[in-house]
Amino acid sequence: MQQETIALHAGYEKDSQGTMAVPIYMSTAYEFRDTEHAANLFALKELGNIYTRLTNPTSAVFEKRFAQVEGGVAAVSTASGASAIFSSIMNLCEAGDNIIVSNALYGGTTTLTDHTIKRIGIEARKFDVTDPTKLEELIDEKTKLILFESLSNPNTVVADFDKIVEVANKYNIITVVDNTVATPILCKPIELGCDLVVHSTSKYTTGQGLALGGIIVEGESCNRKIKGNSKYQHFNEPDPSYHGLVYADLPFPLFSIRMVLCVLRDLGVTASPFNSWLMIQGLETLSLRMEKHSQSALKVAQFLEKHPKVKKVNYPGLESDKNHKRAKKYLQGGFSGLLSFEVETFEEAKKILDSVEIFSIVVNIGDSKAIITHPASTTHQQLSKEELLAAGIGEGLIRLSIGLENSEDLINDLQKALDA
Ligand SMILES: *Cc1c(COP(=O)(O)O)cnc(C)c1O
Image (cartoon, rainbow, N blue to C red):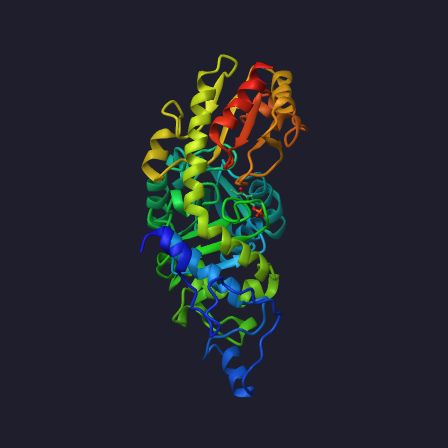
C-alpha cells in the first residue's frame, strides 16, 4: 500500500458498531475479566490495556498508522514533540552518558540538550549535519545516540543522511531523527537507514494548529542495535523496577516496549486520547496538504527571489539554496512549507510584518493558515547584533510558514507589504 492509503486505513479494525471514524476512547482505566487476566497483563503474558498512562485504544490506532506511514515497526505517542525527544533520551541514556546533536536544531531542543539534560548528567556534543566529517571524533563508549533534524526548523538545513548513518552504524549507535518539518510524506528517515524518528505532531500532522502532540517511531534496526550491545545494558539486564524483566528477551520492538513499560509509566508524558484522535484526522489529509504547502512555498520563494527589495531567500526547493542538492537526494514530492528571506534593515522587516493582511504574526509552523515572524524583534530580541549574526539571524530576516491559502493571494499580500 502507498502512504496515502495507509494514512487512511492502517491500524483500525471497526468495532461491532461498524464505526467509520475511529472512536475516541476517553477512559482512564480498563476492566480486567478476572484476577488471572489482570495478573497476565501485568506479567506481559497477554497484552492489553491497563491504564491510559501506558496505552489507550485511540492512541494505539494513531501509533500503528503513523508507524506504517514512516516505515517503522512500532510507535509511541506522547503529550508533545518536546516530550517525545526528552523521553527518547531518557529511554537510552543515564547520568554520565553523552549524546551527539546537530548544530541546527529547533530552539526548544537546543535548550533541552544544552542545559536541561546537563543538569541530570547527560552531555550534548554538537556536529555539523551538512558536513559530518568531524562526527566520528566526538564518539566514545558513553555515546548513546545521535540526534538531528531531517529538514531543520527554522533554518531549513537538510542533513547529510548517508554520512551520518555510516558512522552511527559503524559504532552501533542509535540515530534519532526529528522529521517534524519534512513529515513522513516528504522524507522517510527509516528507509534512509535511521533507527528512530520523532515528531512534534503539533505542526503538520494536526495541520490546523489544533493540539500539541508527539510521537516516536521505531525502525526495525533498533532491536539489532540494542540486543547484546553493552551501550544499552539496561535493555539487556534485569530491570529491578519491573521485577527483574529483561527487555531484550521480549519478542517486541524493544525501544517501544521499554518506552511504555518504564518511561511512560514513570514520566507520564502520555498523549491524551482526544489529541490522538485529532492527529488521526490530520494524518488522513497529510499527503494532500504537504503537496500544497510545498507547491505554494516554492512559488512564494520564486517570487521573493525576483523582488528587488529581497537580499536573499532560503528555501531548499530553490536551485540557488545551499541545501538543494541534499534536499533533492533525501526528500521526495516537495520541500515543505518553511522558508525565510532577508530584507536590508530591521525597520524594513518590521514594516513588512505590520503591513501583511493574510499572514498572521505567530510563532508556530505547519498551520493551515500562513504565518510570518521576525526573529530579531521577537524570539531572538535579547540577543546582541553579534549574537544574532552568530546564530545566522540577520536583523532583516523574516520567516514564513506557508499555509493552504491560494498561493496568488499570499504572493499579492507579500508584494503589497514589500512595496508599502
Ligand atoms: C515544535 C517542534 C518541536 C517541539 O514540539 P512541541 O510539540 O511544540 O513540544 C520539536 N522539534 C521540532 C522540529 C519542532 O518544530
